[in-house]
Length: 471
Ligand SMILES: *Cc1c(COP(=O)(O)O)cnc(C)c1O
Image (tube, rainbow, N blue to C red; front, side):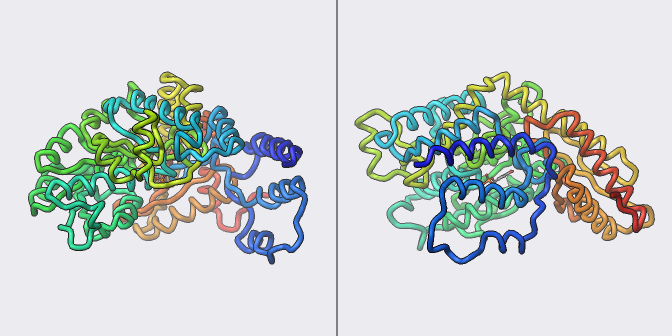
């Protein structure tokens, strides 16, 4: 082990950190440049560890995206808190296999504590079980494995023994504004994408109760209902108070996709959007988004511990039953795994309940300022005003038809991203192209908002002056 490679890595990591704000936000390298650099024949001879570290940093940086900086608003990505990044470095250094208490007692207990803290923060049922997964999609998969087994067990089918061949069909009712991860999760669970049925949403993006009730009544198949705690386009929360009891009356399992929106529960200002959410059967969220821990970390919570346990456990559970400790392997889909709950623990310890609330409110305030600021520019209009941390804008030109404005919107996004000043992504919403604005990083500040608005203003100006380009 060469200590100086670690010193070098530390110095380079600090350099990245210091330069992040001054670098272009988007990646600068092209695909062919990156392939030319990295996709070379496997070397016969090795290289000194310090040199490898320096070479890697020097060769890769231009191809990295400044997504952990303050002016990245594409998709829903999130930043990383100092304590969480530091804890993540330690997790790599300790190099524990966080599968079993026996492999790493401290990792097991810290993850156990982090799960309990999250339940407390998000006011989820005290006795629900949890698992730290790679992301929200795998949190869905973990929770929905329990859901699938439970709804089939109720009609006498044992999935763990018999699998799904010959099993009665399960129907999965979800919002027509669902995230794509739901589809893949359902495919991975062997339910098939065709088990998914979209339920209509209203103008504000919330699932219609009448449509859900009609879909529940359609047939008597075992049913899973998936609700949104903030969809990724407009941050819409389904009406949990009305929908969950309706689903339960029909015998369905209710799962909530709360990838980022579940954190609204930590804010007094936004908590009312989540009323009744605690009555669901399972919840999935991401720590790598709005809790600002480094990639990767999602979390699944399940009310019916037995359903969760029986879907995931190996015989190893009997070891923990004796020791009284929590073996992660009983709740996670993986065997060997990284102790990704430790950075979550660190983040919660750094922020405390108040700090999380402040972070959530701060991001929402920045998102409003950004969306309204862009919307006020000539040639821009707000399509969805933020109610949380997500908003949509669109670019228009007088005399254009809708298709031409679609093309214009994509062109402006591309131009803004080329300035290196800010980075946004496009999305199709109700059939039209829009620019999505997502603020999920604590380090976004007023200056970042102002610089991003100016970058959009500049892209609009340049676009309306053909041939014009700034030095
Ligand atoms: C990001 C996201 C997901 C998927 O999460 P991963 O961590 O990428 O697996 C699911 N649902 C919503 C609403 C999301 O924003």
